[in-house]
Length: 309
Ligand code: SF4
Image 1 (cartoon, rainbow, N blue to C red):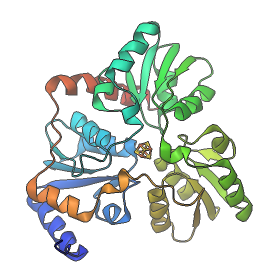
Image 2 (image 1 turned 90 degrees about the vertical axis):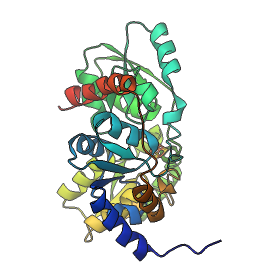
Image 3 (image 1 turned 135 degrees about the horizontal axis):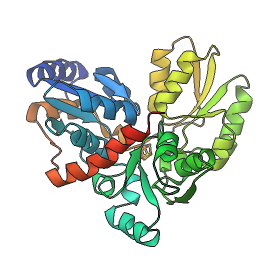
């Protein structure tokens, strides 16, 4: 097999092509570090959705799983959105589809449906509102319905239900394998090793792990918390890409994973070569019909409408 080129070639070419194509690279906090370092915008799902809607460039290269690139296309339909690794999908998003949402609605005609942004576009077309882990509580609280079907993540659903006590919830039983992999016994051990550390965990983790944590936050919330906190040690219960970012952004603080090797293999499929080839050949473009964009935009717009308080 032909020897792969070294990173300096890809870095130089990505910079050249990014200018030539008038492109912007958006990357999720769980991306490999080499991708994080070339991103124009690095963030969580909420940051990236907001920024996608505002970009001035003609082309968006999205380094994240496929539902994120789809959301970028829905929010910026006039832009060319490239998803360099189409096989990079979120297994939790694949646990639900439009047909299952329609069945749930038939069984619960008086309930609104709120979907985590970790859903594919055909699911978003069928739901009333979307949310991220950062604004899920606000969306559920402010959406005008007393009964809510929350999907697909049962752990995030439980987190929301425990805070929006005035409403009735039906929780779908989807889950994230990456966050479910964090085990309470490992977290207990890490806490013993670092008794001064504050534990920040993603609400996609299981109930026992969440109960052992000091704060439940999405990745953007964790970054803000660390920035504002005078303490120096943190145990982080989420994908290790975020820990790499925290170590870069806060070199005077220490970060310990809630357990070793919390890795989303789908997020880690991206390499510099993929970004280079995507910009060079302008592939794989995310193509969505007008109908799909219109229907799924409604639920994303409701996230911005109901999620801001
Ligand atoms: S970390 Fe979990 S929810 Fe996020 S993309 Fe990976 S599998 Fe999906």
